[in-house]
Image (cartoon, rainbow, N blue to C red):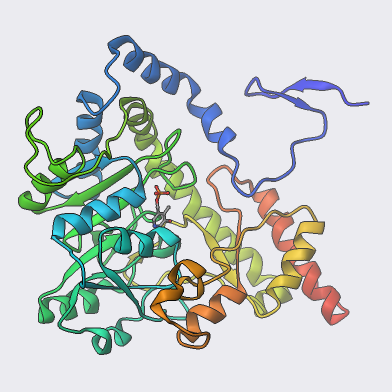
Length: 396
Ligand SMILES: *Cc1c(COP(=O)(O)O)cnc(C)c1O
C-alpha cells in the first residue's frame, strides 16, 4: 500500500520518492511558483499578448546579461538562426560552414534561409567545430561560419573570427545551449555578428514553451531583425521586405524575466554538479574508462549537458537504465548522415570524429537541483558497470 505524503514544498507524492529523472523541471518550478504566477497574472491583466513592453524589457535584460547593444526576441531558437541568416542577406547558392554534431535546427535553418550547409568535422575532446579544418572549406560562395557552443561550452572562437575576417565572411553563433557561457572573458552570443539563443524548456533559461532571441552589437542587423520577425513591416500594412511571423509572447517574456533573475544561481549549481561529478569519478576505477567534459583554459562552461564518452556506450546505457539512472544521447546520428540532408551527398566516414562521437557519447543528469546523493548513485552505477566487466571493484 502506498501512502500519500506532503513534501516540504507542499507537493503530494507517494511514499516512495519519485524516480530520478534526466531533467526534472518541477523542482525549479516549485522554487519560483509564486513569482511565476504573479508575472503571468500581470500579463493577463493587461491583455497584451504579442511583443509589447514585457518583451521589450526581456530584450533589454538579455542584452544587459550577455553584454551587447541589442537583443531581438523571436518565436524559437530555430527562428533565431533563420532570422539571423536572413538579416545577413544570405541567398540561394550561398554556403554556410557548420558542425554536423549538433541539433538539427543548426543546419536546417541554413537551408530554410536558402543556403547550403557545409559540414566541418569536430574536435574529439570538446565536440565543437575544429577550427583547423575550416580554411580548406572556404569557397567564393561561403557567406558565413556558424559555430555551435555545444552542451554549454564555447567553440574555439578566436581562430574562427580571424579566418572569417580574412575571408570577409560573417560569423553567427548558435548559443542555444550556452547562455551565460564565456570565451576569454566574452559572453557567447556577443563574439560573432549575431548570437542565437533558445528558450526551449530544456535549455538553461527555459520558458513555458518555445522562444528565442538574437543578440548583436550591430544597429543595422538589429533593425533588420525587428523587421524580419513581423512580416517585414515597420508601420501597419507597409511591407518593406519579405519577413515572417516570429514573435515572442508576452507570457513567455514575463516567465523568462522571472527565471533570468535566478539564472546565475542555477548556472553555478550546474557548474558545481560538474565539479562534483569529476571528484566522484576520480575515486572510482570507472573514471579511467570514461572521458569527462573538458573546460579548457579561459572558457566558462555552463553545462546544459554533462556529456561523457566511452567506447562501450550502448552497454553502459542499458546497464544504467536497469539501475534506474536516466541518460540521453545528444546526438545519436551526425547530421551529415541524416535522410533530410542526404542530398548533400556526404558518406559514412566523411566526418569521422563526429561519427565516432555519435557512437560514444552519453549525457548524465546535471540540472541544478540534482543532489549529491543522486550524483553518487549515478557514478556508483557507472562504477558497477565497469567493476562487473572487470570482475572486480575497487573501494573509493
Ligand atoms: C535547442 C537548439 C536549437 C533550436 O532551438 P529551439 O528553440 O528548439 O527552436 C538550435 N540549436 C541548438 C544547438 C539547440 O540546442
